[in-house]
Length: 97
Image 1 (tube, rainbow, N blue to C red):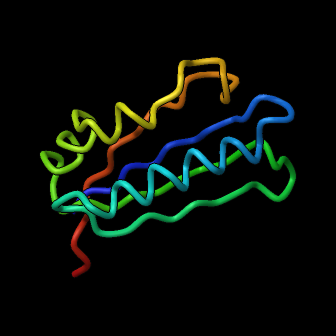
Image 2 (cartoon, rainbow, N blue to C red):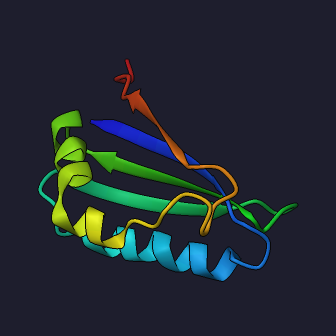
Image 3 (tube, rainbow, N blue to C red):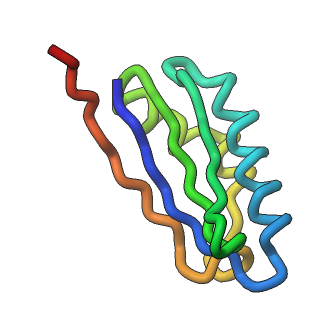
């Protein structure tokens, strides 16, 4: 299993639109093979700071999501909602002993 962690910083006044986009992505992801879960977090000290954690069976499943028509349909140009483009960080699961 892999986790994808993405930090988003919304443009002032675009916090609700940013959350809406994140929710739309989550809804579409649920239809993708290999998708396991998605969690969204908003910073207590800055409501513009939104982080998402998604879990996938394998990186290939996540890559299929990135290439999917659904992802392309939902995507927004940089600067419209986010101060900087969100950058996904991929993490491998480490089995507990």
